[in-house]
Image 1 (tube, rainbow over the protein chains, first blue to last red):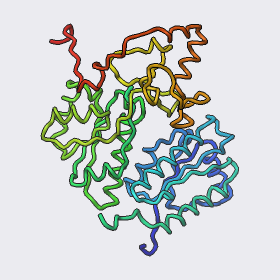
Image 2: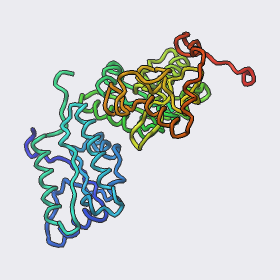
Image 3: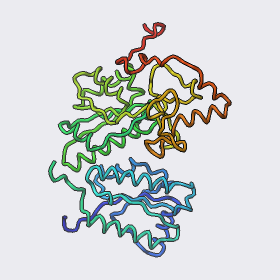
Image 4: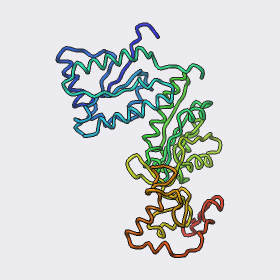
Length: 139
Length: 222
């Protein structure tokens, strides 16, 4: 792995819970790692498998979905659907011999600003360990 | 509808190993409805192939196109201006699609991106089940509107076999015995005696056993 490797990460955040958690984090002066870019979505149920894969085409190293707790989704089943799609995207990455841990999904309540930042930092550390997208050893 | 499922990515990657410019072609017919070959799935497969190309350090150009239907020549003709730029085509329609494209563009390498499974319907969101075996001579009205040819593991036409227990087929606990369902339904309708009626043996010459089938409707032929 290159020294000072800084993985690029995209986080799809629900505009209700996770984005509020991000606001709380900002208010308590906790900053997200610079290499984590947030994409706000009206509900994580709107995140399609293609949304999860596209970033990898464009040089991103990891993607995660940050949504509501399963019993508090405003649209009832958004985060449940997101979890299933994340699982499917993980399966696609596995079929390509790419680590499925590069994609994940997390649930937050709106007040969990610290946890929101902690998860972002954990993802950065996880992807630093995994390194850039692998090249096939014996093509 | 015709129900299909995606081929494993590894199998598709092996097919296109020697090609660099790939066109993924979807179909807005049955495979769109069963979420395997519509424009959304074209996007997912194309993206997956691009990620694989990136992983392998291979200069892979993948484009996307979705036809109204791949089982009608006038729609397949639409590819004429597009297809020449590509080395290979992956059709994610049912098995008819890649054949129609292959017949229309014989110099092109055409690969199937899905496995065609059966004629059936969605019994729940995300769950499909077989309902028709395409025997060419429908007899569901004899059996309370249920087809024992498609839905009995042995295609029995004269009642359940000894493997029927508790309404389930012996092949698996989640497979209903269609003969149990037929009998229950006819009992509810007070038509059980319908099953006692003698009928000549089914004419199987209309089925696939008679070789590849063709249908001509003179009133439609130009």
